[in-house]
Image (cartoon, rainbow, N blue to C red; front, side, top):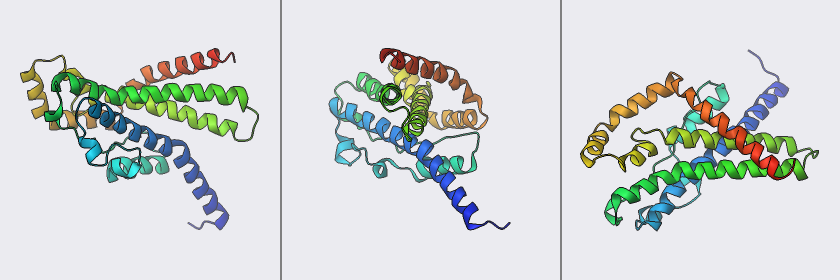
Length: 229
């Protein structure tokens, strides 16, 4: 197949636009998620993440070559129906925690909560753009990026709170389980990881779109209403 230089430029421009709209918000959300884990861990007495240079918003320190770059970028470029990825988990040394069982609960919960916070911030920014910048050439583009940002963060929040190891939800659930039960679950983490991957690849996790869309609609409606738009 022969492509003209004009056609190639359009293709590259389209790919660049998709990366800007989908990948950049995704990357920021992942970094903030991991930063939140490290920040709460430090507040709870463990500064391992800080000592290893992981208490940072620098994408390079959280980047996993496959989960953060290859899979998401391939999904965007090829427009696959499954968009999936991850970052390197922030290290936590439970020996530095005063009450590991309770502290790990809050450290794990910090990740999904951080994404909910970003979704709220994104909805407020949409309201600000709609009220003060609508009509400007870049306003619609900004709103589309912010919409993607909100949905991305909500998906990350609801996905990570699933009560399966190695997700944050598994560690949150551990707070309410007998220690021996949680130990067995952690010992079989490789099995639950496989189950999780099957759920992703088969599209069964599309059920998460129900709470995501519900939350998205309510966040944007509340934000716009709060600004009287």
